Length: 227
Image (tube, rainbow, N blue to C red; front, side):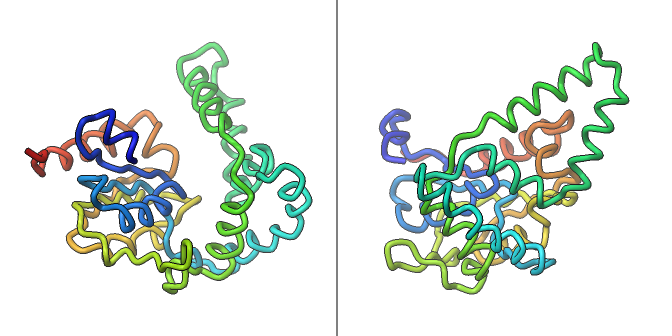
């Protein structure tokens, strides 16, 4: 955030998508001096809502991943993608069946391939972050229970004082609305935006501009830049 503020010449709006939003909550609380606003896009907070069994199942994969974490000090992208697929395995299968039914030289097929390239162009997740995400977030539901700590200090959304935009897509299967919506109530004065979209569609689908980006731009224009 320091580098971004220096490059822009003023504090930027910090935006986080999915688990990046969860991490952005901690960053915004710790260094409010470096930002002028916070945008949380499908950011999970209550990891046991609405199905704690699904979250606990994800946490139970951690011992199986430990050899890879110990060897490379990171969670490889392929394993990370497998974990995401586990959250909605039937949806993944249906997605590719839908693609097979498309004209393969058509615009929709090209968009599908471009989107899949983007989704799979990730970076390895640092081992300690992976352990915290699976063990503390999914296993213990530490953020929602007020037990998530970084360097011994609690992460508390209610301590955030900057203007905040919380986008909660209503058809999200990766981060269910019940998981992301609590942040809008915990952060004082937060604006809640609930597009009728899915986790990926909200950000990169054919209707993403109307469902997310224009409302976000409108919110950005509601508070003044620092003088």
